[in-house]
Amino acid sequence: MKNDEKLERALFEARPYVEYWDRLENLVRRLWEEATDEENFLQLLNEEIQRAEEPFKTDLKIFLQKFGG
Image (cartoon, rainbow, N blue to C red; front, top):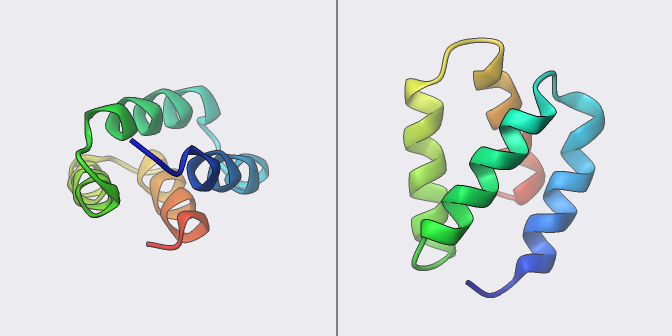
């Protein structure tokens, strides 16, 4: 998928604020690879947020905010 720069910037900006960095990075990169476009990526990410338990749910929301979703 294109616009890797946007993904990298959001990961960089979220890093100081998240508790489970490695888990977040791995999940986000996997979803990015699976997604057909940015809209689909945001849909997949929101599905993960619905399933996630705290405090990882908050980590995902922080990333989403930095990504601009």
